[in-house]
View 1: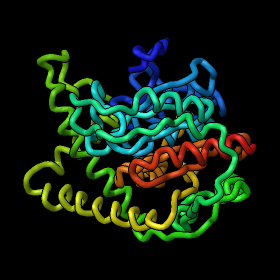
View 2: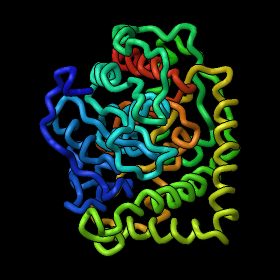
View 3: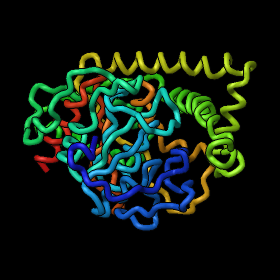
Length: 352
């Protein structure tokens, strides 16, 4: 689709191996530097996509987002990243990490790049079973907007509670700009924040294990278990364990039920508001090479996995800096309300 619209493809970017990571340190080719905070991770798994934008190597990059893999690196690298509504963009050609969560989306240095990219890639694809046949808006129509009058935005105290104080201060200043532009600010609550990461990773493990069964050495050269990195192997082994008959009912099916509960709660939160705003990532990116336990690494995703579990659109736009390191403002909306996020980001950008 990009080539059809005269997009010029200039390269392939680095990422966590099989998208299994939040730092781009698990890449087969080694870690990616963060151009906006040298020596620190760019985030992941689409870390190369965000780094290329931050380094002004390209205008638009295309990443995948399973639990924050576009928004996380966008936040860390100080660029704009957008995860569309699940099904708004075809996943044809994508190598699945978790088929019920994965979504393709753009990154850019400004909102206009995101809008142009979405106009190009958000289309119904009859060859891809998850795509939606919907009345896609013109995402560029709101790029000059400067007012959010009539729009209601919500903050969630539970999102604030799990985020470092300095990040919250920076994000709160960004939210105030939306209020100054006319948005009404309200507060909502989310009772299932502690349920999100275990639900996400249980589903992720099992679906990743299933997706990797085609890499059995007969067509691609080697069995994936024999050549993959530590994080990929960890997810395959745990997914295999959970997928066994005696565990699937206890864990995976319960995770699917938990996802329904989370989706219902997010739907309720969005019922009377247009957008939910808050931090994208709860902590600053660590220095490349820092030894972290798996759960410490997974904690980067606590605020981004929610949108994937609920199937809603979400984006990250630069909110400011903490200690010279970029921090992102995350904006989430109802399914197929992607244009409202573009509008809010445009107003934010136009009133800087």
